[in-house]
Length: 155
Image (spheres, rainbow, N blue to C red):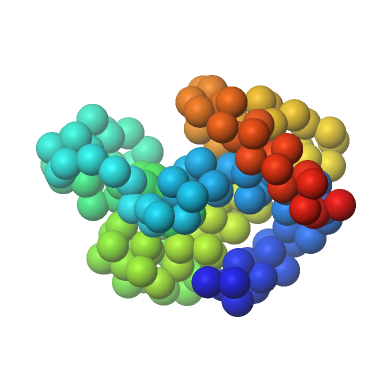
């Protein structure tokens, strides 16, 4: 796990103390402190994602549910990640394959592809980063708490 994290931090240039702090604070919440590399919920719950983020076929919402430590979601995002990694099995297999094989890399890819390093470097707050990661402010207090705890560790 630590090697995967370290490789991801380097590969996606999450290399300054503040980039690392923000990345880890978001990962801690998105993955339920590392316990979840697949989005929680019964199969039927994910039909709400059908018709969004490139999910065009019935069942795509479930197949391309959140996976990885930042919960990469949606067929279009899976396709971009598959293209980046040069592995079409990502798109063929869906969430379970990403969770099992690319939990850290998918998070790093999401982070880099969405220009979070730039946001952090411009001084964005945990609230601003959360809005971009989550689309809202779900669990903002937790994210801020983890950021503060990591601040004491990573100087």
